[in-house]
Image 1 (cartoon, rainbow, N blue to C red):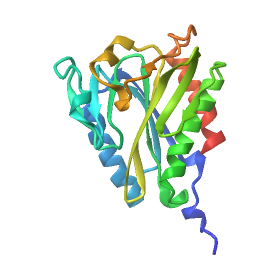
Image 2 (image 1 turned 90 degrees about the horizontal axis):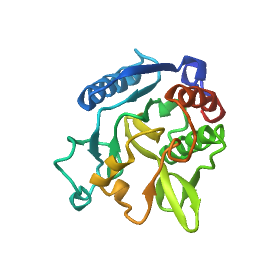
Image 3 (image 1 turned 90 degrees about the vertical axis):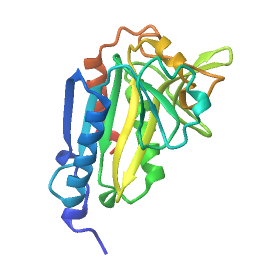
Length: 218
């Protein structure tokens, strides 16, 4: 039995939204919640929302309080997504991805894998080799001499087969802001960004690369 056209994902039907102003985290959560409901009900298209947040920490469902090193530094929000503590702030491209997995195979593991590949393909446009690591969700960069740093975090939530939350890719954030947490519960490795790697990349450059890479994966 084949899917009818209405049950087949169509990349051209995906809405893209870029918000230039810093978006408060609670406002972003409210918008995602509403959009997930609307997608489920068939009254809105799938959405990829590109934005930045003011400095803050988020706690995923697996967050260990001991990993919140400096709880008074920035606001801390319970995110409801999978994963542990992450940092969001200016200079970091957050992409919230709201897709209907009912039209995409109902495979959450594949969805997370595809998000990682989306980041990897985007980084490749800047001649950066992003890599996966067993047991560590996200995308990593080998700095040589046994050092590897995380350049992108991934945390997702799925409700009635509609996805939300997504990825955060470090373009040029203040990397010192990550020191208030143990990012994703991993203390033995650091964090990096495209600018930290010596690339004079703008947010506009990254957005264009994310758009180009999207259809290769989704």
